[in-house]
Length: 335
Image 1 (tube, rainbow, N blue to C red):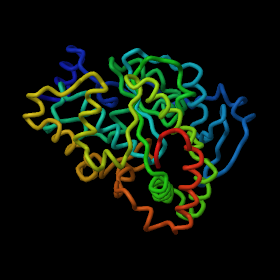
Image 2: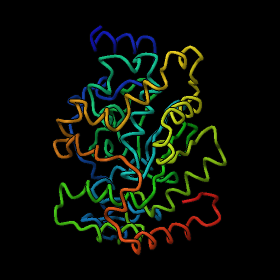
Image 3: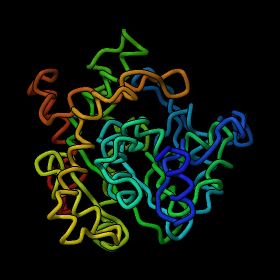
């Protein structure tokens, strides 16, 4: 069956989510960078880190580049009750979580073994759009074109998201590995950026959606208070047992696997489809770019735990760990 015919059936049967780039014609909404919040943004406190300019909005650091979108999402985004948001700090497993969640939710329309599966044709970021990016580019009208349920993503802290009853899946990663991953990612555009600069910024909490510890704690506390609305995953546990994570995702999203699905190996197929190695080797992720600036292949590096040992001294590691332990003390979250 062709992609067009498959999509038509998908929309008709109201199954979802639909891959963003399959559901919308981006050219129908031209890029018109948002400017209405420029005065408010210029009045915010500023800081610099990782070769980026940041602004402080309601106690959180947001990159100046995406600040217009963050403010707009906070003030005007209208969630649907059946929206699902995947949330994370940058380089904490965002791409992987998008793939896992999409494949789990869409498995009725797109069995993971399907040769034309969206994750075999599209980068995960083209399946699951970023709220703050679309709003910054003035293309938020595209969100209205998506059929329900919509699967969306954000790096924003919970307190900057509009109140809603929609489900949120959050992923937390060892901040030492996050810092290393961000450094490698940023070096593609800023080759002179040193790891020491990135480490220093992390220790001061300067990152998109940071301070990291406040971002993490908002979702952690919400997951404990409302476990049916917020699911808190840790990158290392997902890495250790991806099949268990897929089953948790399905249960949380109200789409538990049937006995027949488990017998048929659907859980394993989803985990395999979304593995870092498999995604990295897809043609869609070897070529192309997001907005002509960020190459698809840049989203797939090692994807391992503990790579920080190859870049960080023990003193640097202990400094960052001690800050996290102090900030998360009493929360019940162990780092």
